[in-house]
Image (tube, rainbow, N blue to C red; front, top):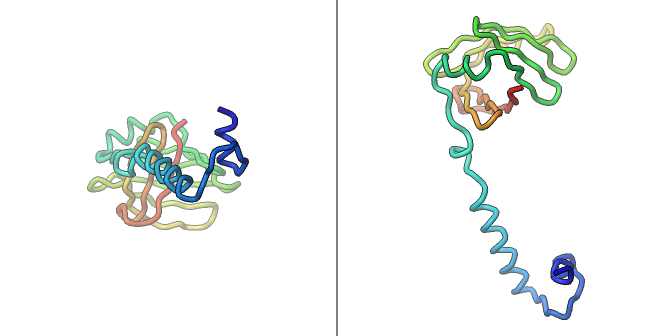
Length: 139
């Protein structure tokens, strides 16, 4: 068993590990990895209404490296992001989380975002789901 493992890092074991054999082992390993990885549509489910969003976020922190936010049921956003205060407001419009946001004194403007959930991860995708996304953990 140990000898077999060493073969993958270039040690010889008495078995001829020619290029073709290594190639097919890599192809098989890669196919298992791709088959096991869920696609984006399988991993995340769209949050389509305000009540579901409030149920998910009520009483929870939304966190990401350097960011801690609270999104309240009454439409407020509060928290900190990389040492600055974050303040704003949100509303649910036509299936999207629409927010206006300030980071410190900087106005980040208005944006309506698609929200998806996977486990304890909320994914906010800007520009009605067609822009960049940010994943925040529910704590």
